[in-house]
Length: 436
Image 1 (cartoon, rainbow, N blue to C red):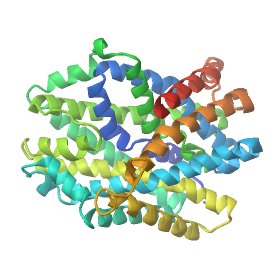
Image 2 (cartoon, helix red, strand yellow; image 1 turned 90 degrees about the vertical axis):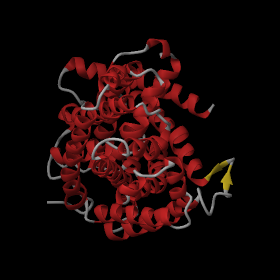
Image 3 (tube, rainbow, N blue to C red; image 1 turned 135 degrees about the vertical axis):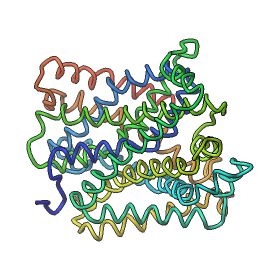
Image 4 (cartoon, rainbow, N blue to C red; image 1 turned 90 degrees about the horizontal axis):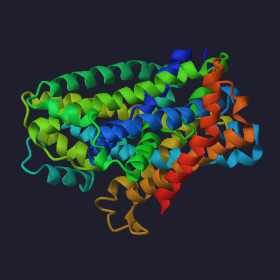
């Protein structure tokens, strides 16, 4: 039975919800763009290695802190060492910054899902995307629908809301992505895209490749936000000794989705001779071109943007839950009141973000519009800094031996080495690179 703050039905609930949180927009548009920019298989190799030795280490660390303390990030850090309570506060602030503008992108996805047949048949795909995000009210309406759906799921609680939703959405996402991959692999010259994805081009492999891969691991797996601490705190039985077995499926699922995405995108791009574009343009400009070209493109466009919507909303749910758990635990609010407060906050900040490409385009902070400034603050400063401080906290303040996450001695020693040395050095390098 779920207690006042929430709990999973079982370890499977933790695994599925955590995996659904990890699988987000980073897998589906940022990963392919960086892979194309950094030499295909060379970037993939760096990404996989960093995922194993840095990403997985931090995910295991955060979940273990949640299980050990049974508290949200603020309570977790504060109960172990009050001097590091600020790190939990940073986690809550980070997710509260990310969720509103992330939901704006979720709104764009909803718009494309609702009107895929129109976007696929445009003469100028870039103009179609720009017309959407700069419109007076349309992006705002879709943003509001997205954030309402997110709040409703969180409102129903951990078991009846988040766990039940993720158990349905994650398998559906994987199934639809496999359908898309199979379609892409049947295109003429698709094999060229497969070769590009898996065969490293070491002429493009340099320090920038590694930094991009590291940034992608942080962005994709969602470490440094307190999500896994929050989700880990909802596991009621003693999962501390088996945490390694619990979390590897999460990291594996995130990696599998990235691989499936690559096997969907690169075969299609190479087969149709379409040039890759960066960032959001990959989703909202390049893909409509692809679907406007292939047989039954409109149907596959609906499938594709359904995948994006599923990925976006599961991540949005986990972002909101971090703040909700803090409001429930530390400020003693009911879940209903906490969701309403966070929802109103997100509507205000998200509305400004949504309109920052149109009506509020003239409002800038340090040369960036409101949306871009929030993204820069969260992605370039707070996330890598939080990852660095978390690894320092566990590696050198708490002591990694206090988190017995593996029963196998060699695996435990490897974890301790990674959290004490590999993760701090890697995250510090990433932070310095992001802020310079």
